[in-house]
Length: 417
View 1: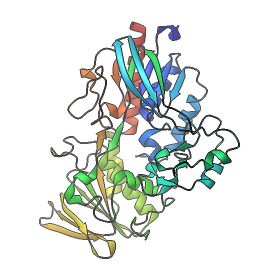
View 2 (view 1 turned 120 degrees about the vertical axis):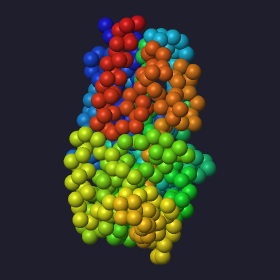
View 3 (view 1 turned 45 degrees about the vertical axis):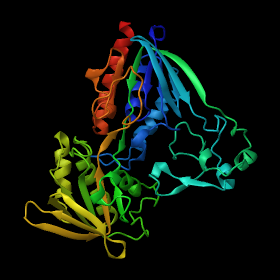
View 4 (view 1 turned 90 degrees about the horizontal axis):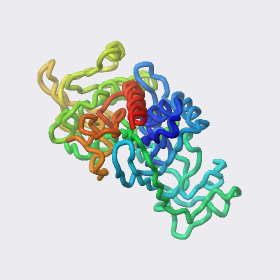
C-alpha cells in the first residue's frame, strides 16, 4: 500500500539523510536518496570519534550501509543533485541531474587503475592535506564501493586506467544523466560545511603555516588521514609539543556567522583529548568566550578541563602570526586574570562554525531558506521538510533523532495525500 501512496525524496546522503531514508523505507515507503558526492556518509564519515563516548563513527555507518544495501524500497543516486522542483504538495515533479563518475557498477576495487594513473589531485576527504590519484576511491568505507575519476585532474587523452581494467568497469564516455521522478514529500538533509576561515583575516588561516581548522584536525587524528593518525605539524611533519585552540572562530560574530554552532566547544575538548592521548606531554591551550556543553555533555567537558596539561583561557584571540621555526604566535586577552597572553605554539586549531551547505547555492522556488540559508521548517509549504543540520546546527545524536522525526512527518505527508 505504501508503494502506491507516493515516493519520499531525501536530498543529502549524510547521517541525517541516511537515517531519514532508512526509517521511512524500513516500514515500507519508497525512498529516493540523492547525494551530490560520489559516496554516502557526509561529514560524519570524516570524523575520527564521536563525543562523549569517543567511539569511531565508521561502526555506525557500516551498520547503516548494511541496512541500505538489501532494502528494496530505497533507490540511491550518488553524484547527483536536484535540478528543479515543480508541482504541488503530494505531487511534486523533480528533475535530478547525475554527473558521470566514469566508473560503473562492474568495479571490484582491484586497484590496478590507480597503479597506472599518472595524475594526482587534492584529497578532498582529507581536506586537501594529501593527494590521491585522478582515479580514486573516496575512502575505505565508500558506499557505493567503487572508484571515481576526476576528469579535470587527468592528463589530456589519457586512458591508461581503461586499458588496464579487466572488468570493463571504466567508461570514459559516460554522460550526465537526467532522471525525472514524482515525489509526495521532500526532505532536505543537506548538512553543513565548515566556515571559510580565510575570511577571518586576523587568525591567519591560509597565510600562517600550521594554522588549521577543526575538521582538518579531525583528519589528522584519523588512522585513515594524511598522517595515518599521527598528530604532526603540517608544515614539516614534526611531532608537536603545544597546540592552541581558538574557539568561536567566526561564530557569534555579525561579520561572519551570527549564531552559535553548538558543537565547536565540545569538538575542541574532544580533540584536546586526541592530542593528550597521542602525545602525553603536549600542552593544550583553549581560548574561549564561554564553554557550551549542554545537558549530558557537561560531565564530559568537566572531565577534560581537569587535565593538568589543558589550560583554559577565557578571552578572545586578537591575532595569529608566524613565529620562529614554523611555530605560531598567538596574541589574546585573558579576562579572568587580567591583561594579555602571548604564546608561541607548534600548531593552532580554529574552531570554525557550521555553515549551511546551501548558502550561495540557488534553490528551487519550492524551498525557502532563512537568513542563514537553513531550511527553516516554519517557512516551508506542505510536503517540504528538513532534517538535522539542514535545519540548524547540532550534534550527531540530535541530528539522528531529528531525522527520525522527519521520516515520520514525511510518511504523514504521503498518507495524507
